[in-house]
Image (cartoon, rainbow, N blue to C red; front, side, top):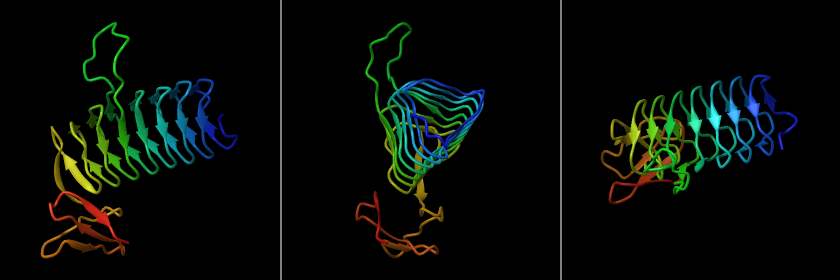
Length: 193
């Protein structure tokens, strides 16, 4: 069901049996296949394609030139930059119609930079940021900034995007008021408040 307060451009193609939430905008030349679920307050930009087994939470932004294939799930507040690429089959072949559709999870608040490639079967952590033109080949932890080919960890960031510093302590208090702790292996951030 398409909510009556959703705005669908006259040049968008939205098939039957699509769920689109209140105040979501679907712009020109977007194509959304039957079965897709799109939450409230989303912005689906021009020249996008969304397959039928894709789930988008609330306030998700999908910029121009992004194709979301079956198996992609984006939680609330996710940003997907222009021309980001997603895969769902690690062994593609022409005319191979039976394949294992791997799942890709974009957790709450994460951002995918322009022209990045996300290899199927990976999870991008909550509030993580993937730098432009990166290739993600493994799971990215919450609050991590990664970039490169393959994408590698650079540093930690707050939900407000301020760089975290854990110089003499395993606790960081951001200027925005949020507090984080770093685990003893230096591999995971926990938000305290």
